[in-house]
Image 1 (cartoon, rainbow, N blue to C red):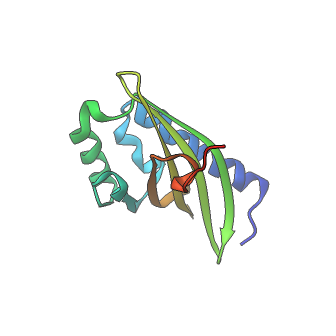
Image 2 (cartoon, rainbow, N blue to C red):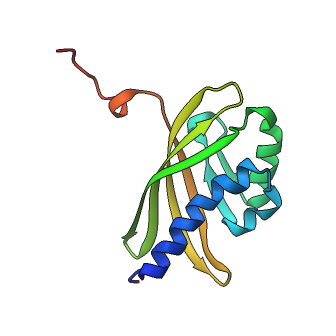
Image 3 (cartoon, helix red, strand yellow):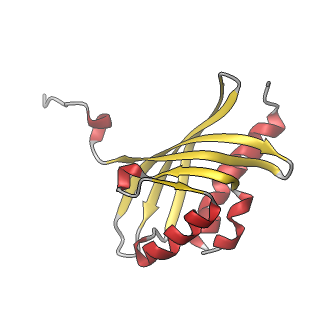
Length: 138
């Protein structure tokens, strides 16, 4: 499958839409982002894998004030890998107390009858500089 420029634009907008919907609390619109059978892997945060849109909505409600107030996505890379479309991006979460965190999103996206949707997402926590590789002081 060769991705067209239009495909790349639509996939980029899909990735960006996640933050807008989450930050607005528009959990009823998650079907605009994810396939019905989405696997959402938040193992790095101790929550395991969530399956299906309802599980995502329930988890967001349960997390309550622990959710970021701002999800910001950057560094979006779209690639075809073994016949599938993969997207890597960086995320910055801003919390109500002013703290922030950094993640990487590893997504598989699929074209559906209603447009591109995320069918798999792994959220990878970034807690150490240089990917956790040892650093030396000069």
